Amino acid sequence: MNARFTLRGWTAVGVIALAVAMSWWAGPRALNAVVVPLAVVLLAGVLAIVRADRPRVDRHPVSEGFIGERRQVETAIETDGTVAATVRDTVGDGLSPVEEPIAETTLEDEETFVYDVRLQDRGDRRIGPLSVAVSDVLGLVERRFEYEATTSVLVYPRVRDLSEGPTADLQTLASVADRRDAEEFDHLREYRRGDALRDVHWKSAAKRPDDELAVVEYADEADAGAVTVAAECVTDRDDEMASAAASVATTLLELGATVGVTVPDGTHPPGSGRSHHRDLLGLLAVAEPGELPERTRQDADVLVRTDADGTTITVDGREIPFERLHGGYDSELEAHRNRSGRDGRPGRDAESETEVHA
Image (cartoon, rainbow, N blue to C red):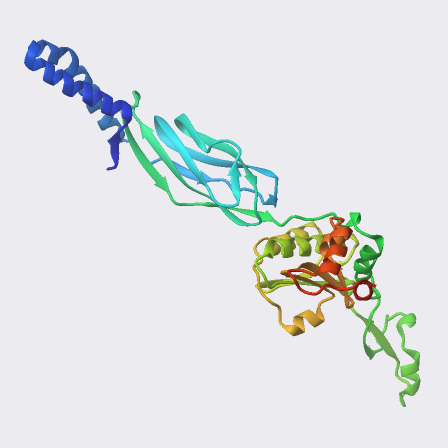
């Protein structure tokens, strides 16, 4: 049993002790008038709390969201009777409560404890553990119940609007979305009854001695326009990497491509649709720093790389600064960096910069 006196309960105990001390001076009448009623109330409170059953707690799922959004946290608390209680919840790192996650309430049958949190940082964030402190009617004695169960809140990386950047950069990125033909050649097979004559490969048939027809098989249309976005981070700025990869993947999906994402600690195959988009964002929500294998870099249609100098998007050998792609690029600052160099190193001249971004 972990029942204990509250501040009000300890005050009552102090009054009883004072009354007992005064009875030595004023006689037992003071003892009867003060001590007995308070002692009865304290004893009744202790018995009520000791007999109180452990409330049953059921945490409701919290939907995922983007940085800056608010989500409601709901916890159902069920009791067999009526009891006064103080409910306290714990909000983990990466989240901030909009109001204090504390409520003094009366639990009767089933009550719902509700408050809002704001999503602050990317990642798989946690809410909990929770405690419920039940007390007697007068608030003299309480018993605290702890619940270690937590709720997961997936916070997506920040997605930037790439339409604000230079048109040429956006066109370069968009070019990977439609570079493959919807009827991409796969292989030849023998002609079967019912096959369309337009699919017959006449040149191949003419070369066959038995004049058997061959039909062209095309790649699955679902694979047409598939784009792989690979992202790596060689510094501790993995939030920036995740934001860049999420922004690129979102833009390509909006352009109609099927998109897959690969990061150092996971991969998700190409797909499309809203559910697939959420899966990609979920992968990037928990992506950590790391380097990709060289083969993965080479096979990627789009490479996102974050290092000490920032984040670049590489498409067909052309490097595009992510800041410029989402419209936050400061050309004057970059010009200054080119003249003076970063961290005391020689800067790039205007000619070399033109070659990189041409």
